[in-house]
Image 1: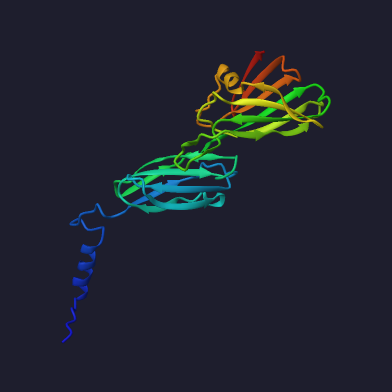
Image 2 (image 1 turned 30 degrees about the vertical axis):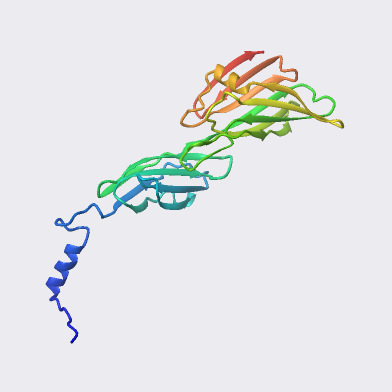
Length: 255
């Protein structure tokens, strides 16, 4: 004979209450933390954010994607109650890279956190005053770090970033590069190559990392600053201008 347990309405509601995570009689460590992240100050030019949430043991708890039209709305997620390692990348897999790593203490019932996304790239401009001469020039910046890991670590493998070549209104030859944050500037080089029917030849190699270190360029700054380098074709004199949103520092280096 089948037995059916019938609960009066009041008893049923009481039972549900005792089984929920709102019960004051229950151990709450298994209940989630309700996390709200505020992205309202994120630059809307960042088209997309990739979010990774890792537990204290390194396991991936959740992954999500946010688009620029969603930044004004609070982002809500339920996470297990522990310290959460969060890594957020903007414009992932591009050279217009942004990053944020907010520390999330999700050990309580609720957490509200304002998130800051920082600029992980710098625009570099080389302005050469003079004639290009026979053959044609190309330029590269050699960087010791070729990329970044999800957790913010650096991929230690050399990469050469090609400069986009153009002439400005004054007839100067310009090269424009975009580099991502480097673990170290020690091995950064600025390379100039000349192409001819005989092939390509490196005609100039500057220790760019040493020059930037010498003027105090901060590769660990929260938001990387842009760099403008001016020189003549022989590189007998060189000027470096470091630019950010609200300041400009100019240093002239003679070599």
